[in-house]
Length: 96
Image (cartoon, rainbow, N blue to C red; front, side):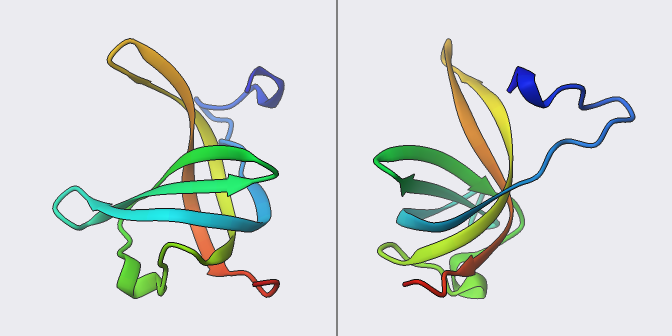
């Protein structure tokens, strides 16, 4: 993520695009107002979060392939650091 600096304080966060990602799981969080996603591509798995979206509104369900726009960020939880994808847009992939 350091390669994407500078961001924050007057510099917008970088948005990246990934096509044909496997949507492995979709779970509502925050009282159903947000989504936690498990995504995979090229054998690599990713944790994602999509704020202010619901699975029915997106038409998203596990097993689909999708294209995503996201901002990577470091998530620290219980002393563990990981990369989390903060998704800003998602659509069903044309490839599957």
